[in-house]
Image (cartoon, rainbow over all chains, first blue to last red; front, side, top):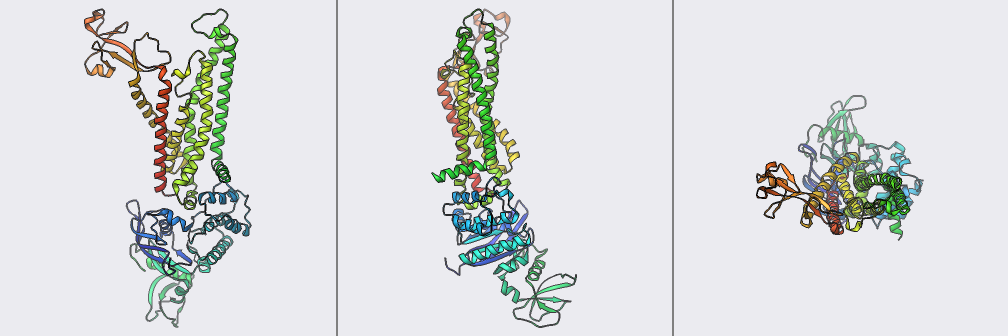
Length: 291
Length: 326
């Protein structure tokens, strides 16, 4: 596959549950090869649905998706061959030990790299003979990640694996993930609603709000091109994205401006503010494609 | 070999409780059945003449009474062996997919395995092996108990305890496993699936039973009331018309023929018609499948139930292939 060719694509993707509930409302997205892309958005933004569509768990209502150029609904086996998946809450088999989980992975996927997965778990000090039931939440997430990494897949889809972890466990998880992705040259898509974690680990950022993409850019470019205005300040030539309440209940406005600007009541935005500004822009307007 | 060993160990650990509970249940039931068989055989060996229903031997009262007591309890045990395949099939089959969905392990298993069908085959194969092994024990124990309880019968040519002994028990277990897997995969919740699967089992097996009875009618013979039906399977009553046509009561009513008097198998519309052969409606007959066809009929039903099990497995594979993991 061409290095420039996106590995994860969505074209006019819409997904409806039941008769009325739209989880996604026209997603166009192309995630390039390499690095970690954060998929950020509030609850019910459609993050899980988007990831599940890529892994072949959900069928698009309209539009389509591809993984490494393969349509998961037409060739799920082909997609699974190049994809590793970590689910939202890493549910492991209660009756199995950590080593059993690795053995099970080998049984299910003959190409599974047992030594690599075991090495990852050993480095974290997770005993192979410990029952999955007695592992902490962080350890369970690490086992799920080791199982995904052991597939040696080029693409990793991680569906909010950090949601139930404490800060230390989150940091360890992200450390293992970034290390693995960078050493293997893989592409990872990590969905999360914890922006500070994303900032540490991710190269790219996709902000998803009520079923649509609000922003898709590199983290560096996103930080460089967004500003925060207080007290209604304006940046000539800039585009006001959205307003939200600041920590002191003051009104903050996110402004997109291609070049650095120097003005009173105007400062560089943090990544969290970039995300909040875009989420504020998408609030209450479902169905519009903002990006 | 190592792969097979690993598969067996992991599969056992994933279904530890169902397998242990099933094995314990079978061990207890088989042990009790064999104990009763042994007791009855010992009694029969003491004085075989006492158990011959055609002969009255003085001094047999106590032995006969003891044999009768054991025999009636053995009858109850045979009903347990009849129900075991249905219960065990559901207990093993329902959690297979539904628990994976309920506990969200399906999302890991279904992404690690590139084929869900392959995953399902691996899991079902283990449970099917366990089920076949355990139910074979019950099937054999049923034969042993039946031969001890009915020492004078040739059980390979007799419908006595039909479905409560022999290979049909094993095949019914496999079909029940198929129902459990399918309903579990459909509902994705263990307890509701168990209830629905139990209900579905009643419907499916009743349907098969009715269908098999219909099929057997072609092999049945119409016998008078006092004919020797030893070893045969009675399918129901029929009326033999003077024309030679054999019809059931529903058809008789449809033709406006009703009878109020029966004398020596002869049916008359009214008591005053008795003896007037010209007013004879017909003869009371029993439709009986001869005992000599037992093996053939049991094999035929095993084939039908086995085919049903295969269809259920196929439907489960299709459903699992299309289903969300949770």
